[in-house]
Image (cartoon, rainbow, N blue to C red; front, side, top):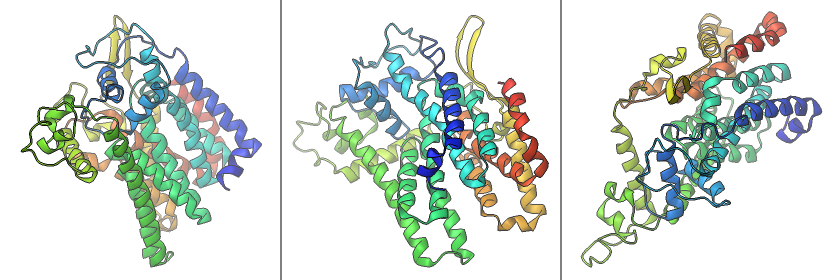
Length: 424
């Protein structure tokens, strides 16, 4: 079923409407509380404020998340957050509400995306609703989406790309593959870890080619289209980024003399012996290299955690404390443990029942989980629990695969959400 037919079906509209309402209430109730800065909010606010002061800055992540929030803020009387502002600041105006709105809105949209994806795979509205409902009430996702963080953007773009790739595999219409590539490029433009959303479609089509279900020229077209669309989005984001930051700023110290020459107000502007200004391609390459090097130098943090701790939801991240009141990115452990157990059972289903190997969705889920979790074992710098979000979503979708295959579970899984939600 195509997307337009799916969302116009009254049976889907009812469930999607309920998910949107539940997501809206859980994300926007008490919106703006607390009215003081949460951990890195001030730092992120400084970065995106640079698009208003036009002073060059450097962050370790690509700029799309900051551009989205800054674009929304441009419709209001937004006062930029200046460098030197204390990160523990008490907010005295409504600027912070503007900054938190877009991450929260994307947090509202994410469960319906998972509903559409799960339905596309299993054609079971109740099962799709069950998986999406777990995400609505998952504590860590809920907390992260109410504050100025970028994970809501990444998850929406990344799983939307998989949704349109699934439409492409069913209908073989190139427009779905183009949209898949655009969304995947947007996800990578939030954080590099989202590169898995580009790799997964290429991997699945590669497997189909090896199994002689796909011809060589079809594989080449798929790869070229997804990669070109993703690169188009990624490069366009940086083009906008450079265009909005023509002035010398705090990021100068990280860049070469040639790069700084292209910024107005730096000490090399009047130096006639300096090298010519860099082209966009050169600036693009230098900035991405500098982001990588800076990212690798991130030091230890009291809330940092190891990749092997994440499947059990260990090491929550503390965000804010006032007296006896805490805000922390604390997972719903019942949901996380159930997802981890589901992934173990999915591995067992692949190993013990070779006939399951013929199911491309099983391999898609295994690959999606592994690619969004295991590479973190190779990263030496400090990491945090939210890096497991994408893998955790795949583990919940693995639960859906198991339920769909087991008749008893398929009949009674509707009783589970209440128990899991009560653990929130």
